[in-house]
Structures are given as C-alpha cells and as structure tokens.
Length: 65
Image (tube, rainbow, N blue to C red; front, side, top):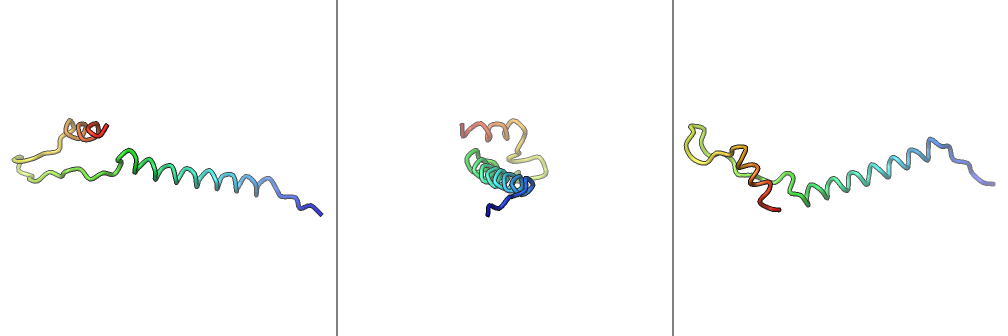
C-alpha cells in the first residue's frame, strides 16, 4: 500500500529547506564580507581627537577589498 502525501506537507518541507539554506548563506555572507566588524569608536565627545565620520566609515568598508 502506497502512502499519499498532501501537497501542503511537501511544500512545508520545501520551504523549510529553503529557509535553512538562506540562514546558512546569511551567516556565511556576514563572515565573508565583514559585516558586523568592530569599527573604532570616537574617543571624545568634545570635538577633539579621533572621530568616525562618513568618509572614514567608507574607507574602512573599502580598505579590505
């Protein structure tokens, strides 16, 4: 006797497999492309010293390439 599976069950497992692959690739992309890297923080609020400005952030993003 052959068992019949409903389409909804099969689609559930297909979606589950796609979700697992997506999660795995997202973790790989974060590691591979440096997302979430620690960037230097500003040392002083008074305007003196090192400040992270938009062009400095762009430099850090492109320096590894």
